[in-house]
Length: 338
Image 1 (spheres, rainbow, N blue to C red):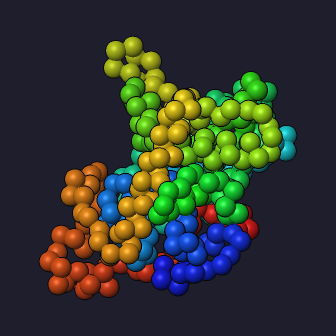
Image 2 (spheres, rainbow, N blue to C red):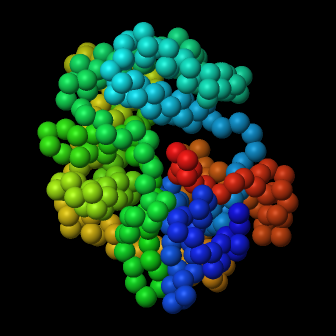
């Protein structure tokens, strides 16, 4: 569905891939998730390609991305079994291999042989989940009361972030887990990294995703009259590669780490204001078809996926799009049936 076809839609819920709706008062209802907020924040042109033109590079996804998808699926089924109280280490290994085949990880072996070999293939997948079971099960089976697994929110416009004279902004998302621990309702987000570095905590604050989960979770908790204040997220980090010994102590670096990220209410209110400001700017970009390049993002890591377009003169960019990119369905954090 194109952005243009969304004009004046009158729906009681937010459609899959819907970005905005124009109200009778002239204001735009806008529907954001973390993926979109962060994309627009890093580069307006990137957002244009990704979420307006719906472009995606042709070819296979990088193996590291596929492994991240595998781990997310494994964690979903792992905690589903934990809630059902039938989780064992053998079952966890079976869950991991089922997810490995479902995500078709082996298709990346030929294109990324060194990454595949470093991870260890299917044997590496079994080793990783077995180690995670030893790390997590003794604590989680006793202290975590998991109340939500990949539970989407926002499709019914229940999570209003804020508004002004131009926009009304709603937040959509799907936390990996929601758990009760020590009388707190805490979102949990699974992340994978090559290795867990000593300064990894610095990667997660400020962070639009963690703040967004707390703001949205608080709105839902208040509507359900749970009587709790959400003020922290747990980042559940897993290293894709077996850790090496720390250089000074000789002890192995951790393969798994849980990082509590705390926010004050003033920080969460600040996040709300920032999202409304970005939504207001996005409305301008769409109306005027004006998208600012952020050149500093073009060469980060292995380079922006749209660098092959913008590194060419404007008159040949359509040729590059047609040759190297597909038009794909609009991004959505989850479908209505999820």
